[in-house]
Length: 115
View (tube, one colour):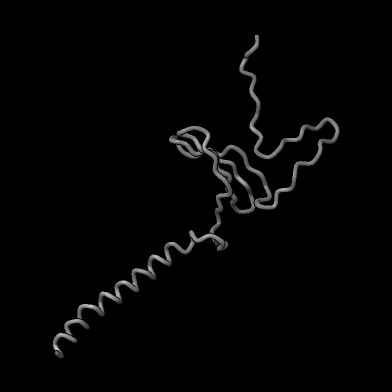
């Protein structure tokens, strides 16, 4: 009777302790992915958009700047950068003859069509 109790204690106690340590380890790893919790990371991914099967655009916040990057098979390329991070004000109305560049507006190229 006493030996069966000691045998169960020797087998089940390390098993329960291992399960507790495993649960704490998983909680710590998955804690940053939980919704509603503010992240303490330096880089925040604001939005991503798939352009083609091998190309994706991503908007990142990093050190007070908002970055538009292109992510593809060849690597990551910076497309545009805007100061201000999360608090970007709407684009002001143009004054005079000065052209106003909107955030993340891609330049328009004349490819010689229609000639």
